[in-house]
Image 1 (tube, rainbow, N blue to C red):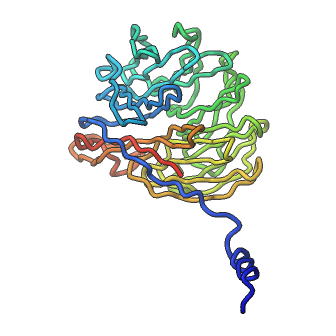
Image 2 (image 1 turned 30 degrees about the vertical axis):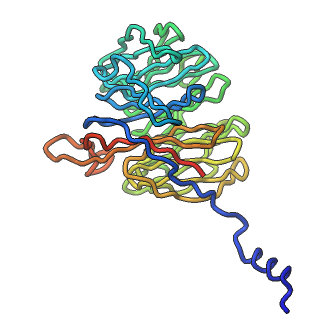
Image 3 (image 1 turned 60 degrees about the vertical axis):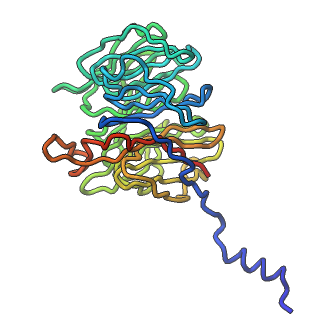
Length: 353
């Protein structure tokens, strides 16, 4: 008779040293919608809600436990909401609106305050808990872009930072007064002193075209950057030493990235890629050593992420889109990038393992 212990040992030795995590779509929550596009999604841990920037459908608030559409923040459909930044310690939420305004609201009640007009157009904003300041990506002009700097909770403008990039994207903070801001058009990351309100360095994202999304590892002082790539360079994830700006790791990811998350507890990095319709998952082995865990097939336009670290759930959104050739198409992203969406096909997606 064959020794069962030996057989089990042989099987284990023949298997990989690890298994993939098994991330999957747990739930799709349908949300009533028109034809509006969408941009960012943010998770509210205390309320177990997500705030969805649904442009002309407004800033929508969805209960992730019941699936209910709880509210649309007043005034945000007309202002065309790109998404929200949430500051729980101040009971403050801020809708970032395409029309160049910010709509402040109480997180606890969703009661809105007076909109703050900053310019003709803006994209998103980033909250720095170290300085308690809000940094707002304004629209570009011929000379570059402005970052408007506001104090919280008043949202009074106290300064600005002028940068050469015309396509500023995601930001990450080191919790000690530094912001790292991706410049997609220049293939670099700005290092910004959030107290002095000035750029102190700009680091090329070496061989990683169109730097877009960022996340930060405080313990190891590492900056993660997801790049969309270009005609010569494949979409990639790179890891930058935040002390020197040196790139220590690079790996291929899917196309059309617009979301990046790092979970220091599980040592996982998640990259959502809307054109490839996949979610890349990496494990951090050490500060400069990473391995791919899996690439989950998602849906077209699943490109942004929010994360619940307590329950280890990822949130995103999508809708059935089409490229209407009678309208302007954002060909900088894709020749067939959707510019219209079918009514009532919008969903909030929850991924878990």
